[in-house]
Length: 236
Image (cartoon, rainbow, N blue to C red; front, side):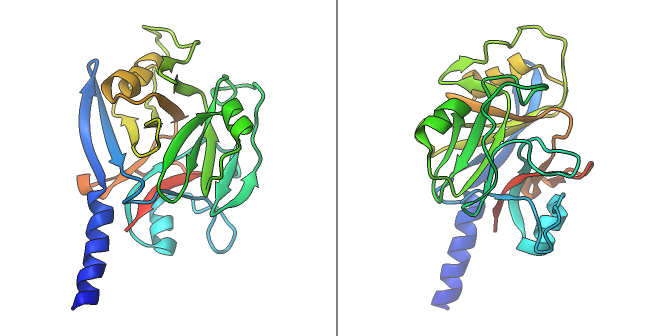
């Protein structure tokens, strides 16, 4: 009975440490999932045991077990390999890309989501290269939405470039991570304001604006669509 109680307590801890809800900021609807990394360790998923990309939340669950929460986590090539830096279970799959380039990924500054056993931190790419943190899991994407409390310098208030977008913001000490997906088209400027002003997070990273997916069973939601590359999530 004690073993069963302990197992149930661990299950409740992981589930209770992930809180998903709908919010509205500046007139735009979002769904956010707030994670306590110390109680619900975040990790990344890319390939299955056969070496092929998992590509969906259902494929992750079929191979790894039930997910409390999951979201697409970074841009990828046609073969679903990561565009930028990617580390899974301490193994580097793709190196850091520090230079500017085409598309949103190359709109510097971009950044890296670095996950350890009990912390989650969004770090601007050049700072990441300089400090070389030891990440158990890491995924690079871009652009940064918020950098040490400042919006990305290229964002334009009132821009008509509006898409469904998703991303992640973290506290300075890495004890708080909030993942957000817009439920209607939003521009970069307003999406960044959600993280900085609405959620009070000093650093935030954009994941995608065309392939945005959320798995939040507590809300009865599991988005389907195009096959995904990197996925971030919390296992039960």
